[in-house]
Length: 218
Image 1: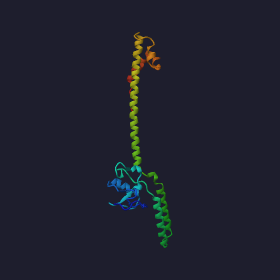
Image 2: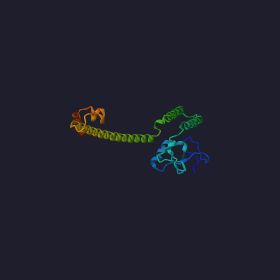
Image 3: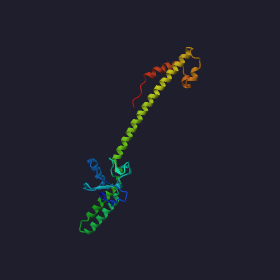
Image 4: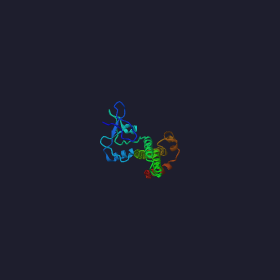
C-alpha cells in the first residue's frame, strides 16, 4: 500500500478518504526511464513500492471506464511544482552557507549562480513539456490529411464521370433533333442551359477529350 508520493516537493500521503490515487512506475524500460526523466530527481532509482500520486497526471491520462481509476498505457506525469521545491532548496542552501562562514568568497556566488540557472531552466520548461503528445498530434494530422486527399480524389472521379454522362446525353439528344426524330427545341427543355446552348459540333470535340484525360495523382 502506498504511503507517500515520490515527486519532489509533493507532500501528498495515502488517505482512503481523499480522492487521490497512487500509481507505480511502469515496468517497461522506456516508459520507466521517461517517468524518471520528468521527475527531475538526481540519482533517483524507483523501487517496487515507489509511487506517484494522481496530482501529477493530466485528466486525459486516466481510463475511467472501469470501477477503478487507472492510467492509460501511454500516460506520463507532466504536472510538477518545481518552483516550490526550488525555494526549499534555496532555503537549505542559505542555512548551509551561514554555518560554513569559513568557505572561500567564490563559493556562495557560484552556488547562487547555479540556483539561478536551474530556476530559469525550470520556469521555461513548458516548451518541452510532453514531446510524446506532440508526436501523437503530428501522426493524427498526417492521417487526416491522407484521408482528405483520398476523399478529394474520389470526388474528382465522381465529377468526371458525371460530366461524361452529361456530354453523352447531350450528344444523343442533339443528334435526335438533327435527324428530326425529336422535335426542335427538345434539348432546351430537358438539358441545362449551359449545355443546350452549345452546338453539336462542340460536343463531338469534347467527348473524345473527356475520354483521353486522366485524373491527376495527389
